[in-house]
Image 1 (cartoon, one colour):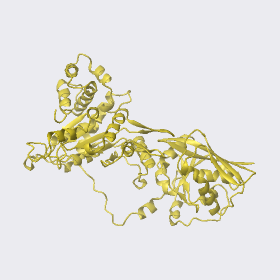
Image 2 (tube, rainbow, N blue to C red):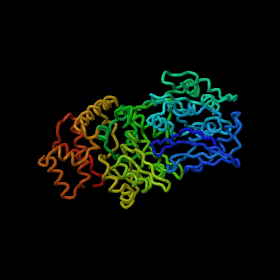
Image 3 (cartoon, helix red, strand yellow):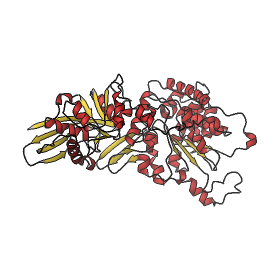
Image 4 (cartoon, helix red, strand yellow):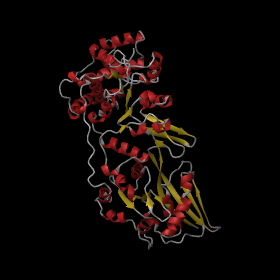
Length: 527
């Protein structure tokens, strides 16, 4: 009897779990059994590992082999366990020294020729292995750029299973023929390997850099830009409604340019989500600018919320975590998609439930919704160009349900701008961002010790206690609530917006005027 061990990482949502891979070799009819709740893609690892070991010039043992993935109750999916399964089998047959395996975690998929291929979710997997106490993590060389973002741990990239065997004291005569392997010879002090040369070589020669967008490109629309600044300062959701061509999309795309940069932890969490989604670009490093997601209106609920029939993947709302989710032409989205946004807006996370288990993904995003006033888009002003009936206009805008609109703090009209009334030159994003950062600093001082950082996160009860029951602004808001002009949830959101406007004005407390101003920014079209 022989036993080999290795360690892999299973991801459930963004949370990584250490999986102990045990290979048991015994007498009996030759066979390869994989147990421990693997899915279909993981069960196919038996054939991939067998062929990869043979491609390394190592004779695959003609014995009864049982590989267990522990803990057995944890669902496991994907092909990222191939390398750890191969290492455990090689350890059981004595082809490697197992002393080197104890402090190492392995992530990667193997091909039939022994090549180690990239997999999704390497960044959260490496982070989980580090937290579990592993000092060395072996990953596919193609994933080395993102894995190297985790500091304080020795990350090694490999192109071929033969490299893994050789590094563990095994005798392998096969050499990797990949020409990119040479660039992994350069090491950093923390044990990572540099792939910058290969990444740079893959870029088209003379490719121009992407042009940065800026708020200074938006002419006119002062009220809409003011609402955008309030949304950025307080983390509020925003509805922009107006005819085509008035700049709704242009404004929404520039919201990230006036948001503060992400902290290192926020950027790492955002990068982990994109790594799991397969959309992370390691060539740009750890990006500190807030993410911006703008799904098409034909997107399905799974594409927006996340999920899938096999491996559970994050959706657009999770990829927009710590950033902006923009729904252009929102009434064209399906009702199911729009209604599924209600719970994540409140909780800041989404729980994807499937028969095989559940996964929790963070979804703390700012929602920006843009819509035309009617199907033809021309019902503003005198409505001379509108061809829609009143029933069509009402039915169209009512696709945005009351419960969803009640969760949107700022609801503003974006009307056409006359060239003769453009006014002063527009402010740049940098100038607006400076005011936003000052306002957020005031809010952070106010909420010190509460766990909140923006006004949009604060609870209504806390704000009411902060103001005091006898405050005139609160009395006015309570009167509106009693008349049915606004819901209690809407009243809380008005308080949050009022606090943001005061922060932008460097005020110390709310006034009746600030509450009324916040209420006017919440007035729905047609009311």
